[in-house]
Length: 109
Length: 85
Image (cartoon, rainbow over all chains, first blue to last red; front, side, top):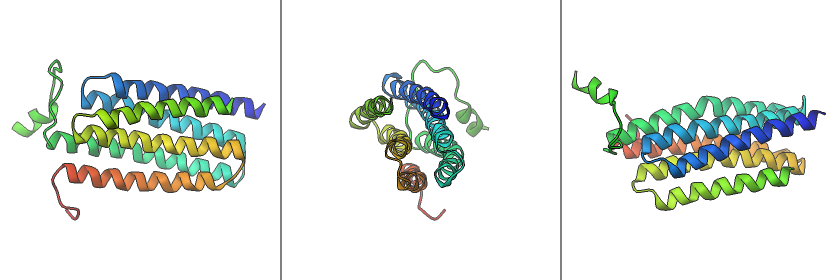
């Protein structure tokens, strides 16, 4: 029973991962790709670690899986923000159909 | 079941590798490397479920932290700043 629930969570996580990677390949712009892929992949990996935690139960393996889950939840938005800001400053252009650029408006003030 | 999950994860990793090889700028490659690093953590978790060994998860924790530091260093390099400001 417990293994079935764990595999179910893992399957949902893998689906999230696959959607994120398809977005990484298909979307036109760096910022779109960052937006689509990194959040999806972090969510999918979190669900996979949650499934591992359920399968392992209360043990050392479960504690390590929980620790890794918390690390990923903290670390992934930080790296996403740093990468987006760095690539904006490095001069990566937005997609030509994008409509708003708040960072540029902020800098012009 | 778990073999099927690992096969799907490997297919996702090949999509990431395609973006690393193709990406027009260095920032694209940095993003794809970050995504690949997070997926390697998922692979470690699946391996620890499959084999029942514990050290795969230890490796996953260490990989998470090293991936964090590596991507922060890459983004500082892209931003043209030194490592100490």
